Length: 517
Length: 108
Image (spheres, each protein chain N blue to C red):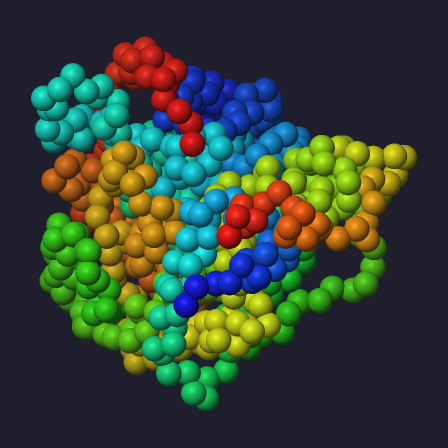
């Protein structure tokens, strides 16, 4: 819609950019952005405006403000991964996906906050502090909040965004940008999308280039797309997908950008409901929504059947081993020599590396590196790493079997519950939380399949709940078509953000006493 | 089955990060217990999977130089450099042994 408005001159790219920048300032308390690239964004907007005046916009994305998770390299702009290890690191190049967006004329507003090195499911463990879910400040949430008897600052009631792409999700959800890039290794795009009420797409592994995305798990990472509606996700996907010579793990198949039908038809489809996803801890609310969704499809004429993915409950264990192992390897590049933080310790290379890494990484990152190294020890390699790789094949085969039996799309919950308050979330440690929260999203990364979160309804507490669709490899068109149909059916409500000015004042007082993790 | 101090020390050497405190060590213990659940799965005759794209040929491009000459750009991010070199402290000096190091594990 906004693209059409730009074309017709109802609004100019610079106006749009300025409005978004102003909104970012007034929603600063959300802590969604680490870096705001005001000057370059305005320049990009001006260039876009010139193109529109000449009647030659580069495409649908020309002039559209976007945000990018801070683990993507952006030339000339600080890229920190929310870690002390990369504070002050100015990328010398653009990640391929960032370059593609810029080539289409998109306006890069800034870099969004995340869990340190994308490790986490809350966007709470970065050095710049946690991200607050915009829905914490929505009328819908406040109406349902039980007023506290003591004079407890209402600000301490805020809920998390989920993670690790929480900043991106919050940015899209609070209208400060029209699309954002996240990354998805175990659900890091879909999880915050569900909690923030936005669309979160994880593309098939190998479809979108990872060049420039600071890697976590090379065999599972993908760039993720966060938008407010499924059509937008399709547009962004269209501009990002395709082979990249700089990332040899991208497939060489020709990718054709597609438009989704206006009136999708699901009557000829077979929707699978994996019974193992009825996991302990799943909230009764989400269970009910899941069931209602299945009925929606049934009533539309689709075939809805129960299926089985027998190795589901080992998926998270398998992920834990493979992830920590790959992380141990990928984090080895951070030694202080070529970039990033460097310790003053100068006795020897090894002691400098050790001190640098001790100073640069937080507990979560160090913990995963050490666990990973443990699983990779000679005496453990076969029993943990290789074993996990075998289990991975079993998990991937589960999906192959189900899709091979005629099922087109799987319908599952995205999260166990709606967003929890920050104070509650931090009671458990990062690994436990991740193990719990990634349970529905994680298997799609194991098998490399495309998956999408579609905001479905508001919970009893007035917070967003989403459902997930998992599709066949490289069948994003079908996946998004089903998602679009579902989106039209559920008509998820728009967030009603209260007057932000008043909050700015209240929160500044609170921020001074709050400690950043 | 607790992890021995020798193994913990070995891990600190390999990873070049520290456990820092008892919580760090406990974190590893929990991680191992969690991972042990994999033993319940029967994987007889199953091949390990490296990548979901294993059925495809990895793209390899021609061995031609298409980019480069960005020495200055790359050196910008390094803290210690001399002309076009990254400067590192002397190598070939191993990390001090457990007894001599300042590490949480010393007390174990």
